Length: 120
Image (spheres, rainbow, N blue to C red):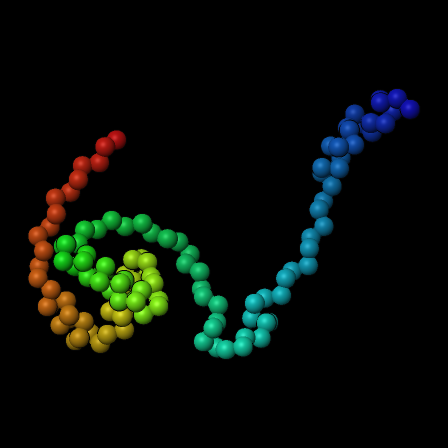
């Protein structure tokens, strides 16, 4: 057979195979179907989107982050600065409103830092 006869209607065998519909695989069972040994070890919900923020802290407050990190490291639970800040935010959120107002009121007001000009 010649090449022209093996081509059906001017299409090559590769082109017709590429257009063939792919078979769908069976859906995997949901994670909820699996038995969980301990309810406290439930899978963590994934953050949908991460937001990058920039802020500045007074030097003594920044030093507190290092102090807390070293305390946790000595206790056998080393953490990253990001995780420490997230835990602190959750602790503030869990506070009663009056306690939160007192905690924020105890902070000294810091002068606003001048904005840096963005280069284009």
